Amino acid sequence: HRQRILLLFEKDEELNVGQIAEVSTLARSTVSHHLKILREAKVLQSSKRGKEFYFWINREFLDEVLGAVLEYIRNET
Image (cartoon, rainbow, N blue to C red):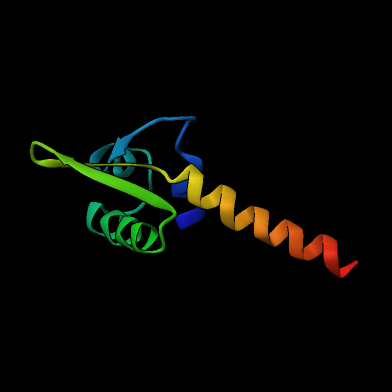
């Protein structure tokens, strides 16, 4: 489910829980739970605007982590 949530984001797009829940088969509370886990893992960033939290992909973190994985794989071969 978390992978599906991540694939909803277009480049530089910010989505709130309601927008994600609308296109998901999951309940809003379940979407919120998955977003919390993704945020705690630093895969997503968020900010509160009014009553809603908006989420976006943490590209810097993913670039760093995935770059390290690629470097590890290349050095193992």
